[in-house]
Image (cartoon, rainbow, N blue to C red; front, side, top):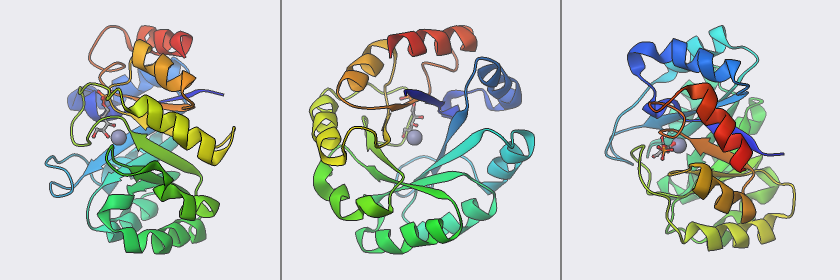
Length: 214
Ligand code: DX5
Ligand code: ZN
Protein backbone atom coordinates (compact mmCIF):
# COMPACT_ATOMS: atom_id res chain seq x y z
CA UNK A 1 0.00 0.00 0.00
CA UNK A 2 1.33 3.43 -0.96
CA UNK A 3 0.44 6.34 1.27
CA UNK A 4 0.72 10.05 0.48
CA UNK A 5 1.30 12.40 3.42
CA UNK A 6 1.16 16.02 2.22
CA UNK A 7 3.50 18.40 4.03
CA UNK A 8 1.60 21.56 4.90
CA UNK A 9 4.82 23.59 4.93
CA UNK A 10 4.12 24.87 1.44
CA UNK A 11 0.43 25.55 1.99
CA UNK A 12 -0.75 29.14 2.31
CA UNK A 13 -0.82 29.80 6.06
CA UNK A 14 -3.73 32.21 5.68
CA UNK A 15 -5.77 29.54 3.89
CA UNK A 16 -4.47 26.53 5.78
CA UNK A 17 -7.86 25.14 6.81
CA UNK A 18 -9.26 25.41 3.29
CA UNK A 19 -6.22 23.76 1.74
CA UNK A 20 -6.22 20.90 4.25
CA UNK A 21 -9.96 20.44 3.61
CA UNK A 22 -9.34 20.14 -0.11
CA UNK A 23 -6.68 17.49 0.43
CA UNK A 24 -9.00 15.56 2.77
CA UNK A 25 -11.75 15.73 0.13
CA UNK A 26 -9.23 14.26 -2.31
CA UNK A 27 -8.80 11.24 -0.03
CA UNK A 28 -5.76 12.18 2.08
CA UNK A 29 -5.65 10.31 5.41
CA UNK A 30 -2.38 11.62 6.84
CA UNK A 31 -0.67 15.02 7.01
CA UNK A 32 3.02 15.62 7.58
CA UNK A 33 3.64 18.56 9.91
CA UNK A 34 7.20 19.92 9.79
CA UNK A 35 8.46 21.39 13.06
CA UNK A 36 11.63 23.48 12.75
CA UNK A 37 13.55 25.05 15.63
CA UNK A 38 15.88 27.54 13.91
CA UNK A 39 18.93 25.57 15.19
CA UNK A 40 18.84 22.00 13.88
CA UNK A 41 17.66 23.61 10.65
CA UNK A 42 17.90 27.31 9.80
CA UNK A 43 14.15 27.83 9.59
CA UNK A 44 11.13 28.13 11.86
CA UNK A 45 7.66 26.74 11.39
CA UNK A 46 4.82 25.70 13.73
CA UNK A 47 4.24 24.84 17.36
CA UNK A 48 2.04 22.43 19.32
CA UNK A 49 -1.07 24.63 19.09
CA UNK A 50 -1.35 23.90 15.38
CA UNK A 51 -1.34 20.18 16.15
CA UNK A 52 -4.09 20.40 18.76
CA UNK A 53 -6.20 22.57 16.45
CA UNK A 54 -5.64 20.05 13.66
CA UNK A 55 -6.71 17.07 15.79
CA UNK A 56 -9.78 18.94 17.06
CA UNK A 57 -10.84 19.54 13.46
CA UNK A 58 -9.76 16.15 12.04
CA UNK A 59 -9.85 13.52 14.78
CA UNK A 60 -9.73 10.67 12.25
CA UNK A 61 -6.85 11.96 10.14
CA UNK A 62 -3.30 11.09 11.16
CA UNK A 63 -1.12 13.98 12.35
CA UNK A 64 2.47 12.99 11.65
CA UNK A 65 5.10 15.24 13.22
CA UNK A 66 8.53 15.59 11.62
CA UNK A 67 10.56 17.16 14.39
CA UNK A 68 13.62 19.02 13.12
CA UNK A 69 14.99 20.18 16.47
CA UNK A 70 18.05 19.66 18.67
CA UNK A 71 16.05 19.69 21.85
CA UNK A 72 14.23 16.40 21.91
CA UNK A 73 12.25 17.20 25.04
CA UNK A 74 9.99 19.20 22.70
CA UNK A 75 8.56 15.76 21.93
CA UNK A 76 6.58 15.98 25.18
CA UNK A 77 4.73 19.06 23.94
CA UNK A 78 3.70 17.49 20.64
CA UNK A 79 2.59 14.30 22.36
CA UNK A 80 0.48 16.40 24.75
CA UNK A 81 -0.98 18.20 21.72
CA UNK A 82 -2.32 14.88 20.45
CA UNK A 83 -0.12 13.88 17.52
CA UNK A 84 -0.55 10.31 16.25
CA UNK A 85 2.96 9.66 14.96
CA UNK A 86 6.17 11.51 15.74
CA UNK A 87 9.47 11.14 13.95
CA UNK A 88 12.68 12.79 15.10
CA UNK A 89 16.22 12.96 13.75
CA UNK A 90 18.88 10.46 14.77
CA UNK A 91 21.45 13.25 14.23
CA UNK A 92 19.86 15.50 16.87
CA UNK A 93 20.97 13.30 19.79
CA UNK A 94 22.10 9.74 18.96
CA UNK A 95 22.40 8.77 22.62
CA UNK A 96 18.81 9.78 23.39
CA UNK A 97 17.09 7.83 20.63
CA UNK A 98 16.19 4.82 22.80
CA UNK A 99 14.81 6.99 25.56
CA UNK A 100 12.46 8.93 23.25
CA UNK A 101 11.31 5.85 21.40
CA UNK A 102 10.33 4.35 24.74
CA UNK A 103 8.59 7.59 25.70
CA UNK A 104 6.50 7.59 22.53
CA UNK A 105 5.62 3.94 23.00
CA UNK A 106 4.53 4.54 26.61
CA UNK A 107 2.28 7.38 25.46
CA UNK A 108 0.64 5.41 22.66
CA UNK A 109 2.17 7.52 19.88
CA UNK A 110 3.67 5.80 16.86
CA UNK A 111 7.36 6.49 16.35
CA UNK A 112 9.67 7.17 13.46
CA UNK A 113 13.38 7.82 13.17
CA UNK A 114 14.64 10.24 10.52
CA UNK A 115 17.96 9.97 8.72
CA UNK A 116 19.61 12.88 6.92
CA UNK A 117 21.15 12.22 3.49
CA UNK A 118 24.67 11.78 4.97
CA UNK A 119 23.77 9.35 7.73
CA UNK A 120 24.43 5.69 6.89
CA UNK A 121 21.27 3.69 6.34
CA UNK A 122 22.29 0.86 8.67
CA UNK A 123 22.21 3.30 11.59
CA UNK A 124 18.55 2.33 12.05
CA UNK A 125 19.31 -1.36 12.54
CA UNK A 126 19.76 -1.26 16.32
CA UNK A 127 16.48 0.66 16.79
CA UNK A 128 14.27 -1.38 14.44
CA UNK A 129 12.35 -3.36 17.08
CA UNK A 130 11.11 -0.09 18.60
CA UNK A 131 10.21 1.70 15.35
CA UNK A 132 6.93 2.02 13.48
CA UNK A 133 8.44 3.88 10.52
CA UNK A 134 11.71 5.16 9.08
CA UNK A 135 11.95 8.46 7.26
CA UNK A 136 14.77 8.75 4.78
CA UNK A 137 15.37 12.40 3.90
CA UNK A 138 15.72 12.87 0.16
CA UNK A 139 16.87 16.50 0.59
CA UNK A 140 18.80 18.25 3.37
CA UNK A 141 16.01 19.34 5.71
CA UNK A 142 14.99 22.93 6.32
CA UNK A 143 12.98 24.12 3.37
CA UNK A 144 10.28 22.99 0.99
CA UNK A 145 10.75 23.14 -2.75
CA UNK A 146 14.24 21.57 -3.01
CA UNK A 147 15.30 18.92 -5.55
CA UNK A 148 15.28 15.18 -4.81
CA UNK A 149 18.84 13.91 -4.24
CA UNK A 150 19.46 11.11 -6.80
CA UNK A 151 21.69 9.12 -4.43
CA UNK A 152 18.54 8.52 -2.37
CA UNK A 153 17.54 5.74 -4.78
CA UNK A 154 20.46 3.54 -3.79
CA UNK A 155 19.90 4.32 -0.11
CA UNK A 156 16.28 3.25 -0.44
CA UNK A 157 17.27 -0.07 -1.98
CA UNK A 158 19.66 -0.65 0.95
CA UNK A 159 17.06 0.30 3.52
CA UNK A 160 14.35 -1.90 2.00
CA UNK A 161 16.78 -4.81 2.05
CA UNK A 162 17.46 -4.16 5.72
CA UNK A 163 13.86 -3.84 6.95
CA UNK A 164 12.04 -6.45 4.86
CA UNK A 165 9.11 -6.11 2.47
CA UNK A 166 6.31 -4.43 4.45
CA UNK A 167 7.94 -2.02 6.89
CA UNK A 168 6.88 1.64 6.44
CA UNK A 169 9.69 3.54 4.72
CA UNK A 170 8.91 7.18 4.07
CA UNK A 171 10.62 9.66 1.78
CA UNK A 172 10.60 13.43 2.23
CA UNK A 173 11.94 16.14 -0.03
CA UNK A 174 11.54 16.90 -3.71
CA UNK A 175 8.83 14.28 -4.26
CA UNK A 176 6.79 14.76 -7.44
CA UNK A 177 5.28 12.31 -9.92
CA UNK A 178 8.68 11.38 -11.38
CA UNK A 179 10.85 11.21 -8.27
CA UNK A 180 7.94 9.63 -6.40
CA UNK A 181 7.86 6.80 -8.90
CA UNK A 182 11.62 6.28 -8.67
CA UNK A 183 11.43 6.21 -4.88
CA UNK A 184 8.50 3.82 -5.04
CA UNK A 185 10.38 1.44 -7.32
CA UNK A 186 13.35 1.60 -4.93
CA UNK A 187 11.22 0.54 -1.96
CA UNK A 188 9.52 3.60 -0.42
CA UNK A 189 5.88 3.18 0.57
CA UNK A 190 5.05 6.49 2.32
CA UNK A 191 5.51 9.72 0.38
CA UNK A 192 5.70 13.23 1.78
CA UNK A 193 4.98 15.90 -0.80
CA UNK A 194 4.83 19.61 -0.06
CA UNK A 195 5.29 21.96 -2.98
CA UNK A 196 3.95 19.35 -5.41
CA UNK A 197 0.59 19.25 -3.62
CA UNK A 198 0.22 22.82 -2.38
CA UNK A 199 0.68 26.05 -4.25
CA UNK A 200 0.35 24.65 -7.75
CA UNK A 201 -2.83 23.64 -9.53
CA UNK A 202 -5.92 22.18 -7.90
CA UNK A 203 -4.89 20.16 -4.83
CA UNK A 204 -7.22 17.29 -5.84
CA UNK A 205 -5.53 17.06 -9.27
CA UNK A 206 -2.08 16.96 -7.71
CA UNK A 207 -3.10 14.20 -5.30
CA UNK A 208 -4.58 12.22 -8.17
CA UNK A 209 -1.49 12.58 -10.37
CA UNK A 210 0.88 11.55 -7.62
CA UNK A 211 -1.31 8.58 -6.70
CA UNK A 212 -1.28 7.40 -10.31
CA UNK A 213 2.49 7.86 -10.62
CA UNK A 214 3.18 5.70 -7.57
C1 DX5 B 1 11.97 19.75 4.42
C2 DX5 B 1 10.69 19.20 4.99
C3 DX5 B 1 9.78 18.65 3.97
C4 DX5 B 1 9.30 19.64 2.96
C5 DX5 B 1 8.85 18.92 1.74
O1 DX5 B 1 12.81 20.06 5.44
O2 DX5 B 1 10.97 18.17 5.90
O3 DX5 B 1 8.69 17.96 4.56
O4 DX5 B 1 8.27 20.45 3.43
O5 DX5 B 1 8.60 19.84 0.75
P1 DX5 B 1 8.83 19.50 -0.79
O6 DX5 B 1 7.91 18.36 -1.11
O7 DX5 B 1 8.46 20.77 -1.47
O8 DX5 B 1 10.27 19.13 -0.95
ZN1 ZN C 1 9.32 16.86 6.55
